[in-house]
Image (cartoon, rainbow, N blue to C red; front, side, top):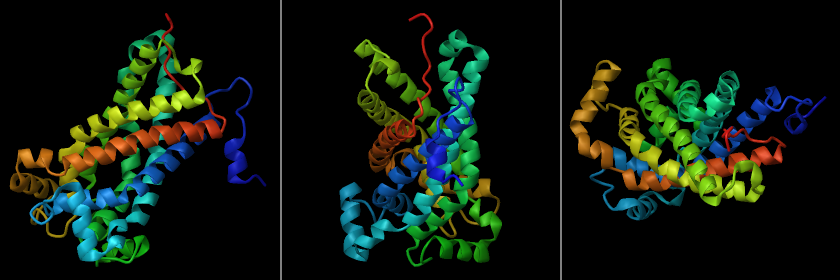
Length: 318
């Protein structure tokens, strides 16, 4: 019986470069890269979330926030929500990166090389939006548990305990209380992430006078890291207001009673537009810039390890 590792390492049939095995490898690489990067940045996310939830108390910036949490709660408080983060973002990365590969490759094949090249930004945007929507359906319950555990460290003793307690206290809908803001955050974020990274990578290759298939694997990963930083900062700025709302709405009692959209409107009015866009933005840019660069670098590394040649749009007139 084949082991999962041997299945992922199996080559695609001759003449079938982008087949089911390629998409499976892309999904696995996406799950791995998102789980590693989000898990590694859990301490930064804990500080960011605390700043968003209680900016009056946590008003000393990123480094000051680290010191304050460690002094009050101990270093282990910075790992709060690690299990939910690592598992949730593996699932999200599986559907996000795998879904983007499925949509963009099939659209490129349908349109043909010339039209695909001319419309590559639109393809990136559509592929990212579709893949992220599906991924968020699976991510939302885990993100709800993570945010609740960060806002209230006494709430649960781990991922499983958090699920049980939220289910008992709030029912199924409690897990999806943050779905509207998570969609408003993640879909624009992912659209910007893939479109900007693709454009930045093309610009870097053009500046080098080369293309992805003409450079070494190490150089290609370097380009992915550099373009990932650019994409991460851009997508962090675009999605930050919705990220702040998501952090707030999962805090018990936030926004009062009533329908979800009413609660979100109440929170937005309480915070104000400027603070909604700026509170916690610098640590989030640091986090997302690092995270996005790491994701694209790890994704390419895993794909190379699995023997998959990553799809790139190519200029048919070059």
